[in-house]
Every structure is written in structure tokens, then in C-alpha cells.
Image 1 (spheres, one colour):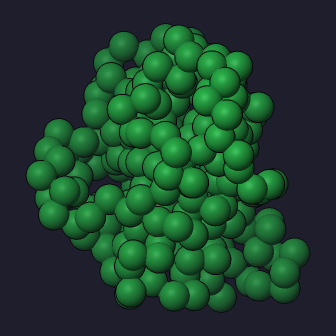
Image 2 (cartoon, helix red, strand yellow):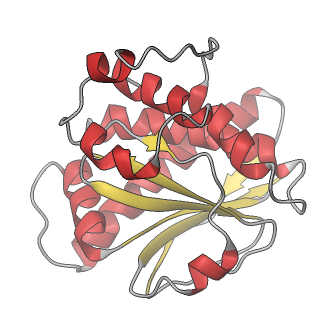
Length: 216
């Protein structure tokens, strides 16, 4: 995270920022100086993205040991958005409830399953405009149609992040593996031990979904 996004994430985690303020912050219409001028004192937190995941998962009784893996992945995912897309992000520290997801039609999704000693599925859900913007950022050129090239770009990005993730798992003496990414249109996720998070960026917001089985 760059400085303003880290500070924004800490404010969100502390309940000192409204979700409605995030578009102006992420699109550069509010500066870090503007935020700091509010004079809010915050605890030191060197892993605010991870804290956001832990806060969101607290409301879900069915998620236990999976929370650690979900949080590990999110830290890699946020860093990878910055590294590969030059796209800072912040996470709403609240789980998106299942009834809300049931009402979200018209979302494109890509997902990938990690198997072996650790079994989770992670994925991105977004409306066309944001899906195209994310894919374009990763591809390095403008993608204007929801076609195979656009889907391939985000599948490749997810595959890269999961590749980094399984390396981390292997370093902890786990034996993980990756299935091929999957993609679908008009996705309503219904997975076991599911956690849905909303991420905000300069190109819009999208959902990051976790579960222990397939949701596409």
C-alpha cells in the first residue's frame, strides 16, 4: 500500500471513515493531508489489509481456520494489484452478506482453486466496466470488449497471485497445488465458508470472494 491507502485502510478499520468517501479518496480528489487534518489518533498497524480481513471475518461464525489463509492471500493480492497494475486498493472491513450477493446480477467472475494440504477457492467478481479496467491494467493496453482476451488477462493475473500464494504455503512445509482458473458471467457466489470482501480502487470497486469449494 502507498501511504494514503494505508492511512485510509487504518481509518476504515477504526470505523472513522464512511464507505461513501472512498471513491473520492481512491480517485485522488481527497489527499492524505485532508484526511490527517481530521486529527484522528490511530493505533499503529503495519498490516492494515490483514486487519480488515480479520474484522470482516469476525461476523461469520462458519469461518475459523480458513481466516488465516484468506488474510494471507489478501495481503498478496493487494500487493500484486500495486505491483502488476499500479493500482492501490483499500478493503471494506465488513463481510458482504449472502442476501446482498444474491441481488448482485450481471457480474463477471474469475476464480481459481488451491488444492492439497490447503484447500480454498479465491476469485474476483466485477461489473463489465471495472472488469475491463482491471484486465486492461494487467494487460498493459486497452481492452474494450468482454471477450476471451479480457477474461484471459484476469485469469492470468489471478494465476500469478495464486502462484505467489502457493510458494508461501510451500515455504511453511505445506504441499499445495493449483487448478486452472475458471470464468463465468452473471455469477452469484454460493460457496462454503464463504467470505466476500469489497475492494475500492481508482477504477472502481469489485468483490474478492473466498470459499472452500467452487462458487463459479
